[in-house]
Each structure stands twice: as structure tokens, then as C-alpha cells.
Length: 417
Image (cartoon, rainbow, N blue to C red):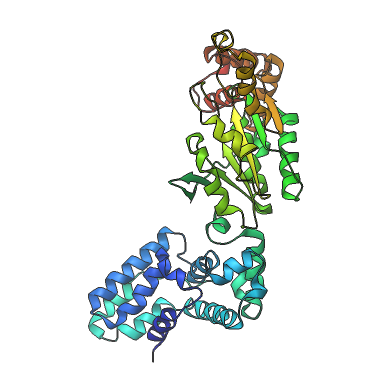
């Protein structure tokens, strides 16, 4: 039996890690292996499809990395048990099957283009076709699969720290159609890129760090003026602590009634989750704030210990209110006021990001200019930055970043000021 046919049979027999056959590149490789019993045009079509996918996904030099990464991120009986710390409860035959699959994946990942050519292109008339077919490298498997003897332990350790499936592969998610969907390209903002508001960010970061240590912590409301970095702070928190087991799910305000469904999906996962609600505010006619109140405190569906809620808002009290609301015809005016204030009170931690004064704004501008290597007369830069802020309705860290971006792009010439 030749190598290609043996590899196809072994791949067909995967059990615990059979899920990799539904992943794009491994599926294309399996199709190529199986096509060797078909007419030559089918082999060539499968070959081109597989090679193209390998190149597109960045695996041109490492089939081993492609297949073993697919296996590491697979959701199966072993990875789910490892993620929940229950590997010792698995039956021996399940562990044996997982070990066998690991050996198979390592074995078939060593199949080269030359192996398939020698097995399928013996006809001399096809020598030109076979000699020009695109190649790939086999490379090395990821560390968890490289040591087959200890692979089960290494993989189990990985899942115990990082979860399994999409929670191991991604750090940011969104709640859509009653399902958790991964975000492939989350905002990469880092803490050190954010200027000013060190005290405010320190409070949020300390709360998050304590949460990751297993301490009972508070839900957090970041409120204040627009452009002050509230949302960026939350995103930067995720990017800093994702390696420590932090994940984030963004939940639209109009889906708050589905909060119990969300927590049911993550309550048993051995990771810490921040449920992120951005730009939160309600009108008096919008009664969905009652759903958020129940989520924060008072509802039958308790928030699990591995979950916190972080929300941002331009309003401290979240509910839009006018003087007519306070002087209206409500017979129990004080009750109405207390109702509107009770929502924000249910966040145990409220952090204010207020608009910076001139000195702080110019300090942020100077810090950003230094970071990007912009050298200019200090006085001219300050005058230019102030004019830029005036044209855009006020000072803010966002305005400072936009000013520096405009200077770097050559749209604002400091020397002319």
C-alpha cells in the first residue's frame, strides 16, 4: 500500500479528532488524498484547491502546523473534558482513541507533494504536469503535538488554561442570533497607547486583575464625555489579559433580555468573561433598562462567578431625563426619580472619564507626538492642536489622536500656524 492511500485510510478513521475533517484546509487535504483513485483531472483539481488554501491561510511551509492547530482548536470529548478539568473522568478507551488520533495526525502531516506524485503520476506523459505542480512544506507540529508520549497531558494543560474550540482560538466575541460568534479581527489597542486618565484606567484594571484572581468583583460602568477612551479602555483590558484566560462578549443593548441564554453558554467554561455593553443609554419610553437591572441585581438568573459586566455610557444615570419629567403629572414623582437612578446604582464600580482641560489635552498631544517622533516647535504645536480641537467641538483624547494623525498624514502643517 502506498503512502497516499494509507494516509487517506488513516484520516478516514479519525474518531475523537474527526472534527478537523470539517475544517477548510484539512478537508481539502483529505479530499486530495482520496482523489488519487479518481481520474487525473480530479486529482489535479483537488491538488490546486488544497495548495491554494494552504497559501491563503499562511501554511505554505507547514502542513504539520496546519493539521495540529486544527486539532488543538477542535471541540471534542477530550478537549471539552480537559477544559472543564474532568479528563480523569474519561473512559480509558476515549483516551486511547485520542492518543491514536494524535499519532495519526502527526503521521499524515508528513506527507509531501513528492509522495503523492510518486504514487499517482507514474505515466511519463504526465511528467511535465507533475514537475510543475505547486508544492508545500511539512514543517513541524505545534509543541502540544510534537511530543507524542506526553501529548495528552500537554493538550489537557492547554485547554485547562485556554478553554477549547473557539474560546481557545479567539478572545473577542459578539452575541448575535442567540449565539456567541467570534470576532476574527478585534481592535488591537493596547494600554500603553492610551494617554491620560491613568487613575481611571488603573481602577478598571485593578478590578479586572482581581476578577482573574478569583476575587468577587464589581460590575463596572465607565461613563463621561465622548472621545475620552472609555470603550478603548475596555478593549485594551481584554488585549492585556487575554493570555490570563480573559474573554469578552459584546452584547447589544436590545438583546439584554437574552442575558440568561448567554450566561448558560459560558457558565461552565473555565475562563473569565466580561460582558461588554457599549454606549449604554435609555429613553424614558425604553423599558429595556428593567432587563439590565434584573441582570445586574435582582433577577432569578444569577450572574455566574466567571462573568462581569462592563458598560460604557456618556450618561452617569443612563436614562435620558428632562426637567419636564421631574415636574410632570406623575403622582409619585420621587418614585419616578428613584427608578431612573436605580439602574446606575447597581453597578458596583462607576468610573468617570470627564473631558480634559487644556493642560491635560496638550499633555496628551505632546505624549503622542513624542511617541510618533514628531518634532516641532512646542508653542506652534499647542496652538495648532487647540485650533484643531476648536474646529471639532472640544478637547478630548480622541481629538488629540486625530490631530496627530492629521499631522502625520501631512493634512495639518504645524509650521504654518
